[in-house]
Amino acid sequence: MAKILILIGGHLCTAPRPLKEAQTLANAGHDVTVQGFWFDPVLVERDRLMIANKAWRFKPIIDFQPVNRWQNLVVRLQNRIAKELFRRFGISSPGLFGYGAKAMLKVARQVRADLTIVHSEAGLWAGEKLLNEGFRVGVDFEDWFSEDLLPEARVNRPIKQLKWLEAQLIRKCAYSLTTSHAMAEALALAYQAPKPTVIYNSFPWAERLHIDNQKRDRQNLNLPSLHWFSQTIGAGRGLEILFLSLQYLDIAVEIHLRGNYSESSRQWLEPLIPDNWRDRLFIHPTVPNSELLSRIAEHDIGLALEIPYCFNKQFTISNKLFQYLQAGLAIIATNTDGQREILSQYPDVGYLVASNNPESLAKTLKNLLTNTDKLALMKKASLEAAQKYSWEQQALLIAQVANSSLSTKLNLQK
Image (spheres, helix red, strand yellow):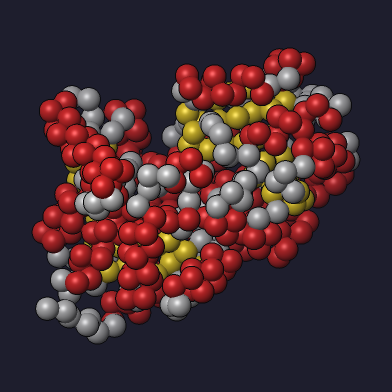
């Protein structure tokens, strides 16, 4: 049995991949601890429920909840100073990579795990330091951090530093994972490194036993229903093409969006909604992870409308696509390299569409919504694909990679 530490950049309930990784490695007999950060009291309660009766532990590195006001102010001030120093003078410091990067490194040094696995940008920074100190480190490129976000959000990002950190970890970590074969090949080419092992962002097939079969989202069960979800409802997530397509869609259908919906998101979204669609558009808050599959399964078609404005969006496969499969929904996905990887293997689960052609999206939706037999066959095919891609299958590979990494002799550095 090895001691394994998994470092994440936020709440456990917003990190499904590390959560499944922790359960998998604990099931393989390892002593597993996940450490991250707490910000939101509601999400803290969800975290507490998720870790109850688990064979592994979660501990916050820093608790940023409002009750810890002074600690919050100090760390947030350090982060703001780091960003300002970089913006004005190009000076790089740990705070540039996220809240609590130095605290993350301190925790890892104290725990002295046999394997420390990093997931976030702060984790990249801490992981590189740990490698140089002789620790065994693993990395999961669940995002291509240096090739992510909209152009306007990249202006003040430490792109050069992130690329350097990614290069160090992909070349030196024996435990190296990513989300798709498209991403693995792109990372290997960019950094002239071995390809990371591909672990799909799928979900346990056994979770289908807990679907509650209730209809809490839908308003008119006589209408077919489209579903889209993300942590946040906002720009750059594919909703733009959906709302542009509605002017070409002359068939009645409910549209359900789920995610955090701030006032700024509302101001962005409201002007996009055609007046004649407002009574068929429903926005829902996030729900606990244990309920999400049930709410997705209420609907008919899952929308994975990723916009390939950066390499990360082009090559990754989002969680939502696999959750649509698990819920038994037909899928309409934009034709990114990552999503094409899945639909080329299982073309009967849905359709690929261009990310910049709303008229084509409307035509695809209409063709599917007016063909109930085709829709039923696609939903059935999704369940068959979900069994093939299930986390039960991915878990076997994760355990193999971890055991191989733990048996690799460390190259200790002075």
